[in-house]
Length: 122
Image (cartoon, rainbow, N blue to C red):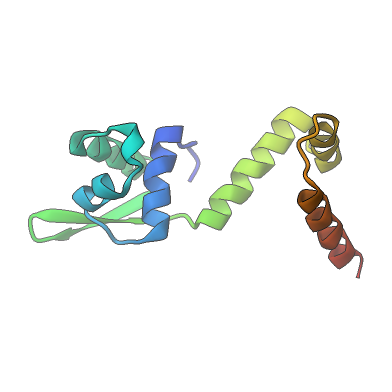
């Protein structure tokens, strides 16, 4: 998937990552109701995602079933890498330092980071 997906398209992807294949109506019913999207809005977003090769569809009678072509883990890895590259020169340490400086790391976060680092050392 070369082209980035928008926040709105990401909401549709989250639905498809949780369960697929789904019809456009299924997606419309499962997307966050706070967004207030119509079925037509969801169909537009599905069309954009098809154009970006993020999803595929297959005919099922008179309707289409949609499924993701990119795994959520791969998407998250790519987005994380882009964020770190763009804002922190490709280095993770300044990101963690930034979060720590702003008191955004809880004791639980710190414990989890320590456990990850311990695992990497062994």
